[in-house]
Length: 124
Image (cartoon, rainbow, N blue to C red; front, side, top):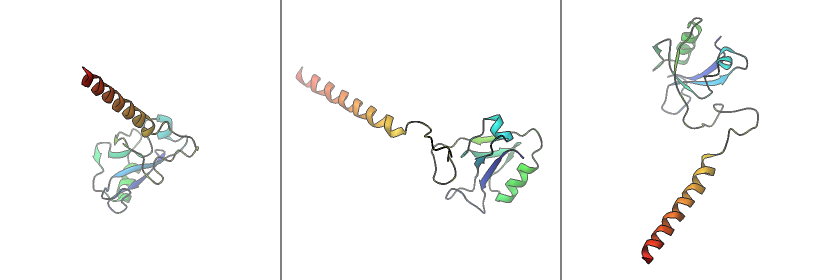
């Protein structure tokens, strides 16, 4: 196989109001894992140029099974983590800083700078 599992389809929507096909798991030492480009949570838009839009889950699976040796995937990266199996690291380690840890101090610093600037301009 290609070394990954998928979820989704018109009959098994993984995301509400979205019948797209998503990568749910990358198998260790499988083809996708060794290639390194595909990530859990990626939306697969096409396989070898064939659009996956509005397919049942089993029809999407069949496309992957018959994809051949050289497989071309058109994907869309996941923009934010989702609940459930998608995005689960499994090793207990964080993937980095949460966005709030960067934005909150940055916004506070910007607000303080604007306040100081306005106070300073007011005194002139």
